[in-house]
Image 1 (cartoon, helix red, strand yellow):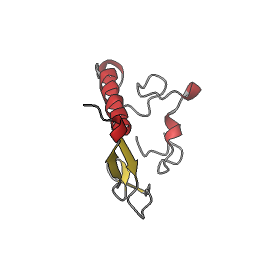
Image 2: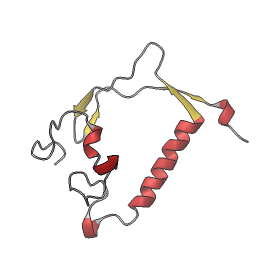
Image 3: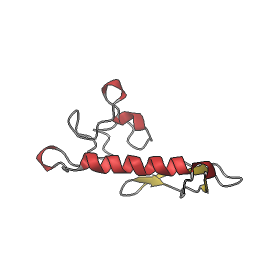
Image 4: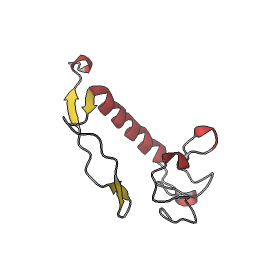
Length: 106
């Protein structure tokens, strides 16, 4: 289903906006259209998906808050992708990570 041209227009193109529905809301529940269901759908939907998303958002927010993320010296971020079981980056993401000393509390 992920690469099916009957379901997606240009399935090999990176278009995150395709997951947005009315008013720019991101729907992963499968209620508005069953295209992407990382947590299942209907009676078999994961009962704790909201908790999982909350923890994921909190973890990513903390990583962004406490660290500076920059490309390595002399490199740009390469967003080239390739199709495997899912779409993955062709070249691993490389970043120079440094602590934001102004955010560190003891």
